[in-house]
Image (tube, rainbow, N blue to C red; front, top):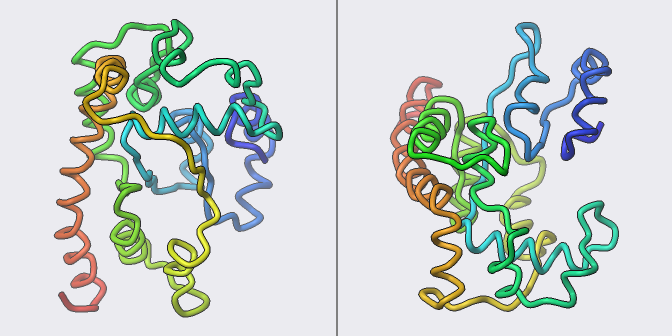
Length: 218
């Protein structure tokens, strides 16, 4: 089952019952509404996301996609341009998260109403993690979902001793011309990200209440 692409999600619907009857624990997708539609009254789910600063992820994806020949999103032509060229191009598509949460196509002009809708969905439907704060994110996820480590320190070692999901690349300077350009192009995702930081901070109290409810104390 491939839930990382629209075509893959379409095929996943054909085998939905078989998928859930196999005892699957986690479904990962960049397509929020389509991924959520896989679940039914019989097979319910809870949603979490790990958000990253919009400008940081734009840089990371640019440098990754121009070298990841094994990915269907590989862009050989991006090896001929700089990140600044890409940021200035008409092919740059911003505000991915707000578009996904509101079911708005990438070419549709967003408004403040879309942003408020995305904030509401994030607040009511999604448990939020922050990529820059992975230790706290993992702690909250473990407490909220009741996850247990199979081996001591396996999460810590995955994050710190032997990280596998890394993509070293040049960084643009915060406040530079390119940074400021992207801040405008990512206007709505930037606002949503800062809202998510507030939600993330507020989840600490919710986690404490979950522990109390489960009898684990404060």
